[in-house]
Image 1: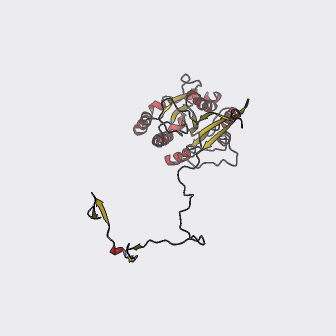
Image 2: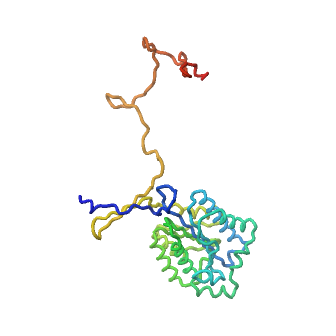
Image 3: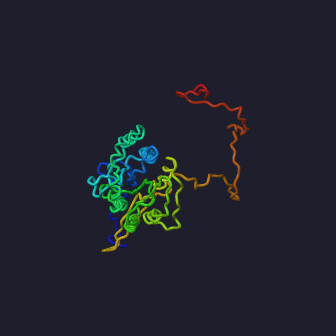
Length: 327
């Protein structure tokens, strides 16, 4: 075969190694988490129950992630806010801007949770007059768009972008057609997943079922409605279902000729020894049947059997044999 027609032009992974990086050779790319919190007044009812549950769940996830990987990227976005200037979309605020996961971000959440001083978030809540105008702003559709656009702001490969939305409102008053169109666009991104955490009495069938089916590229039969999110643990478990995606660890581009190329990808689906190999056994040389094996001791001179209690062991120390218990 002509070597010019079959050549490996490029060998890469899902995340290109940064210059001077000492990471493992089979780096599988960075995970990215976008936590999206509804800032409507309903989140702060019942002594701030819903907002505190959301923050605690996010904190627990980040504490797990920081132990698993040092390369994850995270952001926390507020929507339905009174902020109309800080992002490209009105009423959307980057509460914690996109960046590397570190202790400072977790400590910031910890202070909000422990002190119950949520003024830093409550200052973004719309007053009654502004809240009445949100229905014409397509905030939900723009929020999904904003989260997708965050990927374009990083220079590294993203292996999986997990978007998690916390909201108590199951009937957002806006153009459903535009929301579904945005969900369709998300469904074309194979490395993106969307989870909606419906707080309180939440009906997914009104809109969010269709949004989740389209955004996660599922069929209606594949989607199952989650249970009620009454505890932080139930929220964390729902988010964990999207954490570990199967990711390519090595990609090989092959050139077959002018204008004809193919790409091969390798996936490390099974990690570690899984017990697929059977234990070794002794078999008879004559009939290949399994035999029981045992060891016997014999004297060197006459081949007489020696019992275990008749054997003493010694260890050589500087050329001298000493009993084993003295060595």
